[in-house]
Amino acid sequence: MAAYCMVQINVHDADEYGKYVELAGPAVAKYGGEFLVRGGKCVTKEGPEQLRNVIIRFEDFDTAVKFYDGPEYQEALGFALADGVSTRNYTIVEGL
Image (cartoon, helix red, strand yellow):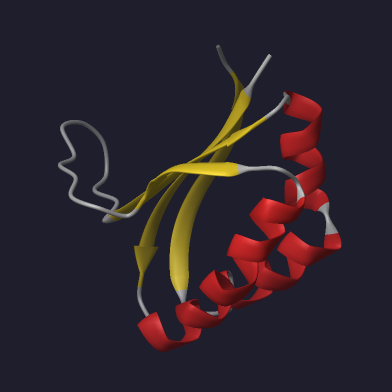
């Protein structure tokens, strides 16, 4: 059963966040992930506004978790989570 990484992001430092983006895409590809949503127009109807939204589909839940915990993505994540670069919500969910 497929699994989805759903990420809501507010970017505070676009230049530093760009370092994350450069590494994250190849990490997604290595684990067989497919971007279904990557930015784009959005409107928040409930909850705190998040200006950037990403949805990535993986073959299954275990692969999505391996991707997130893998060294390639963890290296990228270091740039995204650096002080003042972004605030994020990240959920991995099993789906259809």
